[in-house]
Length: 615
Image (tube, rainbow, N blue to C red; front, side, top):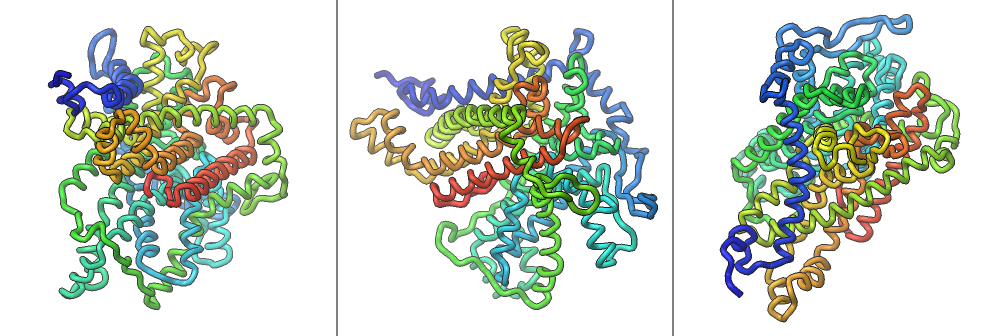
């Protein structure tokens, strides 16, 4: 067969190969069709004004004090107010406009989560103390995703009559006045408690993978204590810490749960994610290209953050000469003052961050929650999950959407990882690798907005069951499956890619030399050797699909018959006839799904899979 130069350049094979070409073209065409093109349609909408190319909608955002007000902010950080007949410290936040508010909230959450995550990671990686295993379990609890309900618990915790004031003010008398956290400060605290485990997991993995000999050499040269941490340990762990922090920043930008729960405070609504979301619930964004422009501003910020950390990590050399060998991590008994800090500072802070998930359980099994604690034990909320038709339906919907999305994710991640890892010289290899990774930097609300404009304006889809403006026939399940498969692809792709890197290419070549075709070699050699990575990535993606919020409460909330779980939880939390207790019961169901997925993954793969793709 004649050698093909175009095949060698594009696909890395001198002879055209159907399996290789499919591995490149399937993820490429899928991601271009359902990620790149929708974003460009939204881009075209944002740059169109009166039928002409214009930056009018962007200028209207940055010229409006509502969206951009850096010089004359309203609001306050904290002031004394009267609540329930007594004075309290009210933490609220300054209003710099929607765009700056979103940036400041994201930066604040990044800083706080980095501090919390790094401190906990360092404690767990470097110290051995009584109760460490209990602390390890407690650090796992905040990873359980319970959209909306955990934020409701956080809000209740920091009310003047909440549990924080009950402990710190009423009993320990550590606060001169009760505190009341609301507005943007409330959003920051809720997001920090929700997202700091992401930094913790990345930082912990970085600390335990540091070559001990590097720190020992620094100690031999006179470096000790904080100087050693600042000059050696922290720089070596920085790639993991930075990756977690940037991921948190992106999640903070797109988060909708905290702004929705705190929306009783007008300033909490002045975030980009809430503004885009509100365009759906008040007219489904019809004729509102300004929201398309705002979504592009959010997307630009997220991609800048994502590219910045990749550039910074790639700027310096972090490799260790003995990496790949076996060593014992540097673990020591804490000194007396360090033990006191762990016992009386770290542990209480950890308990505060764990309480939201505990509160979800209490709320699910209680009749009401007024004041400090829930009251009235009941099983009615749990029973409602299987007895109320509307609740049962949303669970079935989510299971159906998530299963379908995971099947697509498996195909996408397997083909993209195989193409980009096995044919690195191909010109399409870095393109495929980037396309499979970049969705992690694309906020869900941006995907929802781009799908809205894409399916409602492009002729093949306009007026079809995919058109969100076609309210009578719109089937949100199809759009949700597409969105889930795009958004959660990087987690499975990363896991499978790691597995492929551990399988030497010579094994595949040996099978082919013995007469097996490439498809036979892939099915009989490669996939059996990476099935643990494939299964782990699929389970991880499934968990995230079940708890997907941004797309679920926008596109997924247009037709109540096809609600996913998160859309129903949002309705129960803020609806006029809603029930936070019933939403908490759904939260308990999601926690059960996540715990089950982790247990199954651990039993089958014999590995500890985290919620962010680390193994």
